Each structure stands twice: as structure tokens, then as C-alpha cells.
Length: 99
Image (cartoon, rainbow, N blue to C red):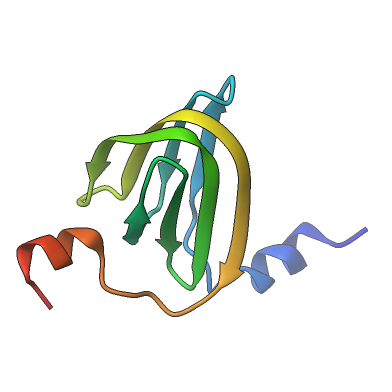
């Protein structure tokens, strides 16, 4: 079993975040740095150097707070997947034409 201090050292490239799922129908995610895409079938969110992909049915973003990095989602969550990637322009920046 790995030492907790070793695990924390390995994760220094990733911002702390938390995912709270209530009965697979209501989800709150903190520590979001960018929202790349959102649809009824999936969301792509950035957490510092990682990408979090959420797949589900009838997904709807209920709230995005860019100041605190909180995203609230309703709908049936089927899967969560992490991958390493560079962030892309956020939906909010695309809508407001900001760089």
C-alpha cells in the first residue's frame, strides 16, 4: 500500500476538486477551470491538467459559477472518465468572444 504523502506528491499537477453525486441524478463538481462542451449526453470539463468527461442521459447544466469553479448538473450519470489534456477555450469564452 502506498504512503499517503507519496500519493499527494504525485498529484501536485492536479487542482483539488470534489464530485458529489446524489442518486446518479444530481451532481455538483468543484475545482473546474474550464467547461469545454455540454450536451444532453455528455459534458467535458477541465480540472487544471486533467479532463473530466461525464456521460449520461438528459444531462443539463443547472449552474456554472466561474469565480468558484462550481458546476451543478442534473440528469442520469452513466460514467465519469479522467484523461490528461491541454485545456481548450471554454464555452463561456467562445460565447463572449474573449481569448
